[in-house]
Image: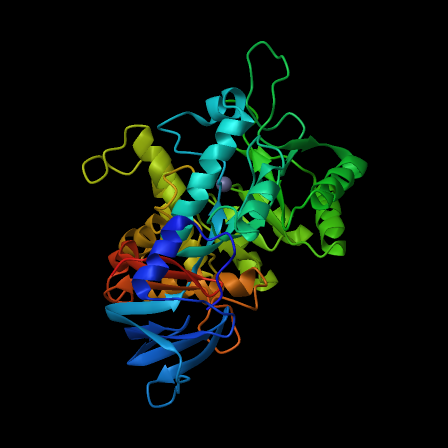
Length: 426
Ligand SMILES: [Zn+2]
């Protein structure tokens, strides 16, 4: 087991409780849960051998032979699975029922937002998410690049991050907006025209964007419906520029036309897709574009606006979401697991998976695959998302069987990231 030099006192305490002693890069650990979910299927009676920061072996205890000096950690009654991957988070936002998005972007200092983000990162990791695709700082500039550096260098605990930095919006289309018409700091970087969209795409990549996020549509004014913003040519230019730099483009899109333009431009994932039609979803399927539905964000916002779930009828936005999700499933679209956490509380990332199972007709094993091997495949992360020899030792153990009861995903007992134990709660 490898341990970063920056391990906190808390982790050292965990280690001393485990009787870890001197840790070397060659040390191995044998994990013995009740079952292993390897990213695809459940395997009762499997064990997993970790060596350094990699999975060395997995299989039945007769198939896996641990070295004589390996330590054994028993995880009775638990399911060991790959560290989960959140496909749509915002580390620099906190729930809108605490502080509105406008106020967060306009009135909260960068220092305050960054301090919060460090806590959000820790909660994400403790909730079993060892990787997160963070889709825009919403006015916090390039602070996600620094947050990622702080995590990667072991200064603070957190998931491995794929960051989008500022995100790109069509000039005038985003927010916050003031009735005075005066310019206020925006939640994303504005651009218009082929030259400018090319420049800001390069600028964001140059400053550390792993993915480029573009808003293909948005509402121009309060209480207006969303409308497509960027032209097809502008979206094409963004995708071509990003692709040349080896970065995928992800598109916020809720309208059929915004989705269609983003899909045709070559975006790899569509975020939200609320008003998607059967025809648009068929186009997604045909072009191999995945949908990140973020049902948890819509559900949370509706509740913040007073929806008493279970008592009131579904608000129009929720009813529409149910219809579009049905159409997406019927078209055979690939789903990404990501709930837009930040709109709701960090660490409650599993809410998306619970809603998909309890309200949108998915089975627990389908959402588990999405959150592990599925997201890894869509995000080009060949080194994680499954439990297989040679992959990163990013592992999480939950009490019970999450393939039978999705609520088990809230019962996180043990988290390993990069071969180091970051949570152990027998
Ligand atoms: Zn978002």
